[in-house]
Amino acid sequence: MNQRLKGLSHEQATGIAKEVFAASDRFLGRTSNLVRILSAHSPYIARWFLGLVASVRQPGLGATTDARLRNLANIKTSMVNACEYCTAHTSIFGQGLGISEEELEVLGSDAYKTSPLLDERDKAVIAWAEAMTRNTAQRDKAVWEEMKRLFTDTEIVEISMACAMFNMINRLNDSFSTDLETVDYNKKQWNAVAGLSVDEIEDYARRFATSGPAQRRGTAG
Image 1 (cartoon, helix red, strand yellow):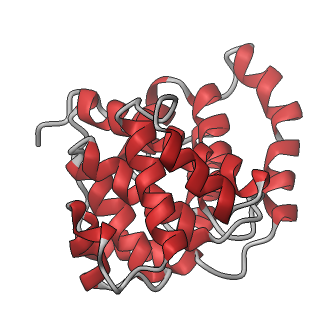
Image 2: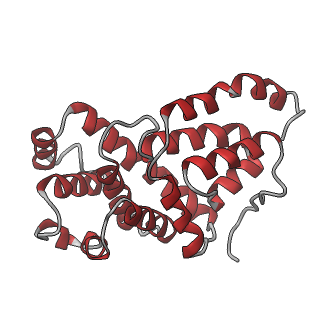
């Protein structure tokens, strides 16, 4: 194990951390090692982090755009940053959304630009994620104009949020040397590609009003 910071197991989790784990298992299909680290050391932030990730990434929990497109952005972002942990996570989740092994392969290089496996919206999202991650999006007029041609402003915002969020997550996992879970464990993400409701995540957030003060007083972990 190379992980620099310890995380909590389900058995060790109490209070806020236990609440975060339950939400992660429901909204993301399982609890990642990054969520375990954050919950161990900053549970008050971990619950907001979990809500943001679920809302931006998952189908039915806040974002209104195609989850497949958002995850293409997540995969390409992780690949550009060479974050093995996040590339594994997002690729496995992508398979649950119907992204094929062949599509994942072309995503790893410039081959996506000419691949018949991807349509023009796919290619525009991947190029935009690459530009954002390399911090060239501000200057890349052609990539921006393609996004404006193919997507609504809402779609652009949500796809961009997905990319920006995974740039943050990539940096956290690389800096913490987060241990990658098994493939079988991460396939549990497939349990969270359908049947989720925005009402559920709003209920999760409403519970913060009572659990937050308790944690700040040091009576909840």
